[in-house]
Length: 301
Image (cartoon, rainbow, N blue to C red; front, side, top):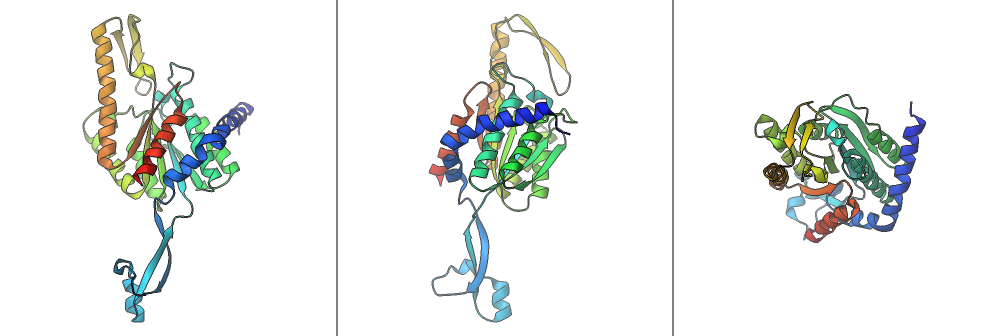
């Protein structure tokens, strides 16, 4: 049963993000994704000038007369929010945690979809699929999406990005716009080996079938350490601990270098897979980052 506290959070999030969608975002969202695919409309008799590549050979053989398939631009979109609820999202050094930033961003995307009469669905995951909400239209459905994102009582703590993409491929047969929202701090990105190979394969396959956008949620402290002496760090997903001397300039330089390497590795994976990527940090204005991405996509069209 939903608690009063959860319902209050949902309403607060809905009010805070709806204003942004109404003011600046809905048009950017629509222009960035409209017309990204074609859907079958009908079969009609061939007329001179028709593209021979559209001939329906099955109907032609059956009737003895040439027929062509007619396609029209997709009238509506299906948006899938694939949201990482793993334990590493419960970190933030400025204003809010990564998972709060992810929730706000998902709210904006979901409300933009409703404004454009599109369907929106959810795959919430950790090292397993935690929740699956079938795409539908309407404001009430969006509120359900927000409730599921905010209710972070996940059964898993780790991250399985490949598993989430494989689940999307299994349940979403028609082409969709998929936002993969995660901090991407998982073995699949951080190390070489079978896990990374599996993730890259899933990313490439999903990127071909769907319009896939990777949204990387980060925090400034993951890129730059403060000069604060000895610090004990804990991996929220594995429970592993380590002590580092942040007072050492060499340690801080190493930390920043590792962060740049992770970012570069993820960007390389995305580029090889034909997937757009946008980086968002806690404490910054994520709307501007999304608008920059969408404007770039519109120019490419």
